[in-house]
Length: 81
Image (cartoon, rainbow, N blue to C red; front, side):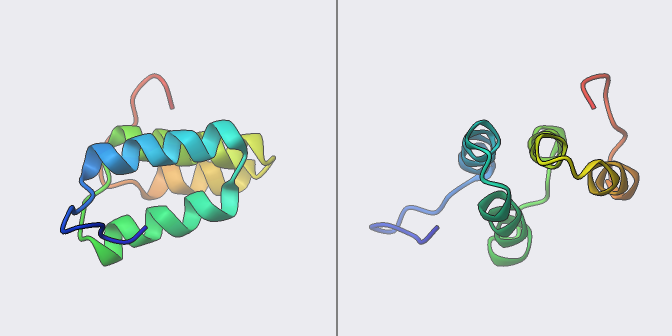
């Protein structure tokens, strides 16, 4: 995701994109964008970002990675996790 005409993606942009990746089964793209959100755009993940990533891992059958992500979150998981 690159900046277009000076528009910088925000946390809501990444929520929507990660959700779309989850619905589309695009695990690799979702992982890449999650990393870029944190390290490229310096956006701290919120519960909805983590939720999308857990959903992505779960749908891909990578439950261990989903569980590890939940354990490593810097915020408390909610009931949807």
